[in-house]
Structures are given as C-alpha cells and as structure tokens.
Image 1: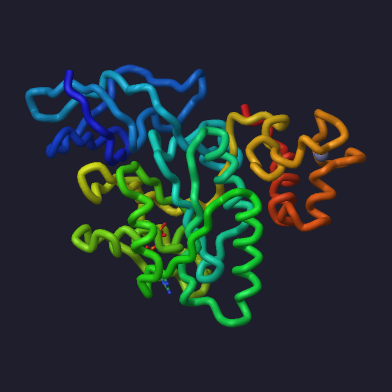
Image 2: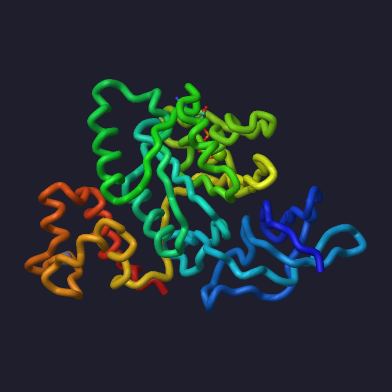
Length: 306
Ligand SMILES: Nc1nc2c(ncn2[C@@H]2O[C@H](COP(=O)(O)OP(=O)(O)OP(=O)(O)O)[C@@H](O)[C@H]2O)c(=O)[nH]1
Ligand SMILES: [Mg+2]
Ligand SMILES: [Zn+2]
C-alpha cells in the first residue's frame, strides 16, 4: 500500500503528496472520529494509505491515527463538525487589531479548541504598521491579556517585513497551521516567506472592514524538506463542538491555574462565593475579555455540544 500526506481537500477529491508526486484520490468507506459526524472525513495534514488505480488517481483506504486535529461547528445551527486540519505541530493564530479587527471571542473560542485537542498555539498580531500612537494601549492590553493566559504573542507586519524571520524560524521542522479571520494576512505571510508560491491575496473591503474570503480551501505548502505550512480560509465564526460545560474552564489556561484557589472544588466561576477567578479578574491577573468569553461560552444555548 502507498502512503502520503493529504495536502488539499476539495469535496470528494483529496490531493495526496507522496514523495514528489501529487496523486488525486477519492475515499472508499466511512471514516468517523469516535462517533462524531463530520462534514469532511479527510482533512489536510492527514496521513493516509492509498491504492493507485490504472488512471493514476488513487483510492484512500486508511487514515492513520491523528496526533491531534482542529474541529469546529460549521455554522451555529449545524450539528455536524468540520475538520479544519490534522496532525498540527503548531497553530499560528493570526489576528489584527485593525483592518480587519479580530473579535476577542473568536480568538478565545479558537484557543479553547486548540487546548482541548492538544494543539500548541501562538498568536501573531499582524498589521502593526497600521497602528497609530493612540492604539498603543490597545496593543499593550491585548498582549498583557494573552501573556497572562500563557500564550506567546508575536507582533508582526508582513507589509514591513517586521518579525517575519522570527515566525519563519518558529515554523522549522513542523506542520504549521495558519488560522484566523479573513483579511488578516495569512496568505500574505506565506508569500512573504516563500515568494515563489505567488499565492492570491486581496485587499480587504473598505466598506465592511472585513476580508473577502480570498483563500477558499485549506492547502499545505512545503517550505523546505521538513517544514510545512497550511494556509486556511478565513473563518467567520468558531463554533465549539464536542465539549462539556464542566470542561470549559480547563481550556482557559489561566482560569485552570487559578481555579485551585476557589473555595469550592467544583466552582463554575459564575456565582460562587470565594471564587478565585472572579477575584482574579478584579485584581487584573485574568483578562476581563477572557472571562467574558468564558461566560459567553458557558451560556451558549447549544453548548451541550452534542
Ligand atoms: N498594512 C498591512 N497590510 C497587510 C499586512 N499583511 C497583509 N496585508 C494585506 O491584507 C490584505 C489581506 O491579506 P490576505 O493575505 O489575502 O489575507 P488572508 O488572511 O489570507 O484572507 P483570507 O484568504 O480571505 O482568509 C492584503 O491586501 C494584504 O496585502 C500587513 O502587515 N500590513
Ligand atoms: Mg488567504
Ligand atoms: Zn471559581
């Protein structure tokens, strides 16, 4: 049986990289993650076994066990989950404070999922060239909040080539996922590191101050022998799936850390007396916006998640 890496997945066709060859493959059989229904059974980053047919297309017969994956609820009322990528060594969550602004709750939902599925994440704050003097406070607060949460934040300007090298170094010898809302500059970063790829990017809409969903499929690009980067389409909303409310606090690292000081061991950090989290928010050792995201997720009507 032949083996390869799924580098692109569009509907029923999956491009599998095997050595230097790309084989277009279809799937045979049903693939499920522990009973969870997914809209796409195979995703980029999957390592698969396939059989080559006479017409040089392939049939995927087996998906190797995944080290991890990122999954989201496709839309708010959708029960099915969408697999964004698998076997990720590092998720680079790209955000921007302006043009377009990345909502904090979006960031926090992404991070909760990456914690839940053991994907290491760093935060890239792109477009710092657009920030004015009066935005300094905004930037400082952002970095403060996420540093307290335990995330490494890198200030970036793809346009001015600020810290692009640092990000490139971080990517070495890994499968890297670049995720974020549309228009933040995910594809632009890949172009800047590997200009020969010449990928399509587009200016954001002036009127809506949001991206135009230029990248439409996730795809893996090889940066060098052992370094891969997954460009992903901008995500509008990040619906959580497959998580219980009692677990949510575990996936906010700073809430988890301080929760051992709560009076009640099963504190939900919403109303209990002696709650170290509510105290921590007052004291400024837990970001207000992080706590607000926590409350919003806990209040999700559909957060039975199954
Ligand atoms: N000012 C400024 N503009 C940038 C920077 N990085 C990217 N851009 C611009 O932002 C726009 C959107 O960039 P893309 O790379 O297409 O964004 P994307 O995140 O891939 O968007 P989707 O594919 O829609 O998800 C382009 O016009 C880029 O030139 C930056 O650091 N500063
Ligand atoms: Mg793009
Ligand atoms: Zn508490």
